[in-house]
Length: 351
Image 1 (cartoon, rainbow, N blue to C red):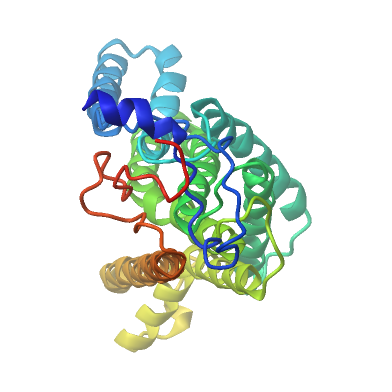
Image 2: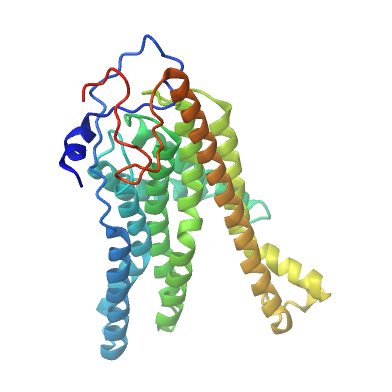
């Protein structure tokens, strides 16, 4: 990395979106500094690879020695590995006044407070057809409040920053929630069910990036994008709409198992009375599983499309605002860091 870029990068206070509104009278604060040098070491995928190997080795040793003391290690590695690599991915890309310590705190404290808050709010929910939708609204509300708290002093507030911080909060929630599910899967009346534990961890690890991480990223992108580069959040209907949208996606995700099972009965023409004690007949189990996977894919695809659309929309708005103010485009493919900043300071900023 050129020495010139390393020396100049911390002095760049880019506040896209606010340029057009304050053009001609805006005094750029030199307090807004890049907190990260944006070295692209790729630690996230290296950590994912090493962590996966450690997880496999721990499983093999546990099976070989029958040492149940290693079960908590399996639970922690399997539940936290993918979410924590999300945090490392964010650390390598986030800009502005966000420090690495803030991201770590958002992951751990946000995750713990998230599951605690959701548990308290969901304690008295009735098990009915709408319970999954209610759970979606409750958990996304808790994560949204935590995201507001974590991002209150973050500058500049942009859609991209919000998406990255939202991913961090969502990853923390997913990690602690997955650990709870893995623990419940392992404890049975017959003792520790290692197979059920591993199946639960694998499924939740694979799905976590398109679950809690994705939903909170969407909410964060819209929430921070509404601030349009300002130092404070501002009221807008867009975050409310985003909250309702991600809550519904969350509810559809959680209820997908029930929906796919009902559709399997309808598609195959099997009467509902064929189910015994809530167990799906073996004749339609394969169809139900296929529909379940398709349902998850559809919900995930909708979420990804929404997130990409939000980020692209705000990127266009930022480009238009900077062009109107006479600033260089902050999102450039020639960025030394690869994050969209080309290293050129705006006008009147000391080099």
